[in-house]
Image 1 (spheres, rainbow, N blue to C red):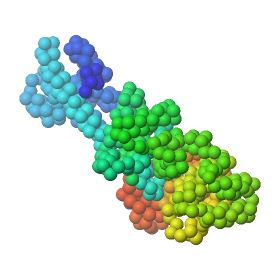
Image 2 (cartoon, rainbow, N blue to C red):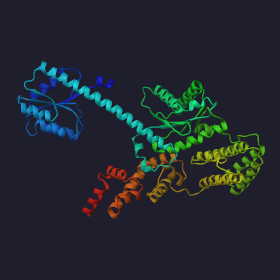
Image 3 (tube, rainbow, N blue to C red):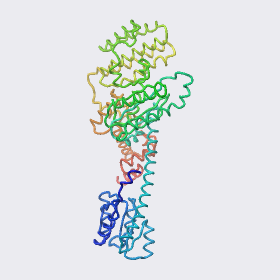
Image 4 (cartoon, rainbow, N blue to C red):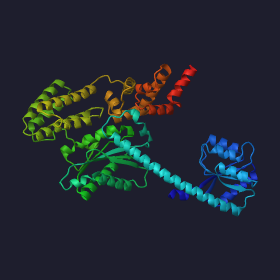
Length: 542
């Protein structure tokens, strides 16, 4: 309510007699600094034209009833179509019929000329209180709308981190988020130390979210930075921070505060992963996958830490992480050199040797640790050499190899399949002719309009990192990939409406919109008409 104390009551005066109009203006301003005359007009028509040419925001209207062209009551009725305000009508006649009509048109008060200063001030004070009460109600409603919108945004953000592919047609809402730089954080509980601490798990999400809100509110107090947080799966929480400074060190500091708070106040261990900076909320599913991959590092380097993409590039050594198994260490190093030379047959032979040595290990834990070591080093090699830094998911896949293999034979087959993915990436890296990624992406989109289209699918089709691809596409075309996909789908829908007799539902499905109502709403936003009316007009004009 603090901003209401400094808010002025913006007032407009309309009267065809200049002397009276100027007198009303002076009377209003004499009632205190709370009033501001933002417009003075000699006719209702003049005010209407002004509001049509440019938007004038006002709270209070003083208007004469009897004016040439359009009287004051007609003016109130017309302005009510697009503006919210209080109205005071002024007349030289104290006629009860005028009073009735004025009230019926929504006038808050009725004054009779000549206007007496003291009486005018008393009446204006009453009007001021009504306006301020209205402001308070509006501010409460605005705060409620903000809270409801926040809840809705959090709900949608939560859906993006559940691991499901979401078509770009369902991501128009991401445009509601402010422009700027974004970071995504994932806070994941490491383990439960004792049975007694199991009870803490029931309140784990509440604890984490309370601390997130407390730390970020204090940290960003007095800034324009915004943040959202929500519950994830398997004792994890997510935080989205909109920070125009794009300062990774700042996000690291926040993560460290949160990690320390959890560690020392609750005696619990949590690992926090921080994404790279991104500028489009539609990229959230890709950032989610990146963070889930980063979290896998705690299996090798331990929990209660903060993992970032920079950490991975700087701290994963080229040599084997596990030093206890020299034969495996030597084989993995040879395998990496074969990959570097792109000697596929040699690499396959070394992989076969690696699997034979793996079979000799005494425990599943040793097997798992060596597979993780090999996958980390292989992906690290790709990250340092590939133009498309899109290989983090391979680490996650590599870490899951032992978990999804019911037998050693199945494990070997899965490792071979995993290595085939590595070969495919290397093949793309070694291609001499690289087609224009933007044109290739556009063609893929056109060919798949009726299918589920995601940023990840487009990026994979042209073998680029999704984040880099989105930035590259916008720099090259001047529009976001989401806007381009929407435009192409709706243009195709328009073409089908004109050239075919397909039903709206069929056209909606054909261009990738499963929700026909949503499709119609979006079509109207772009073309000014719902599809049915557009089709009718097209037939009439043909």
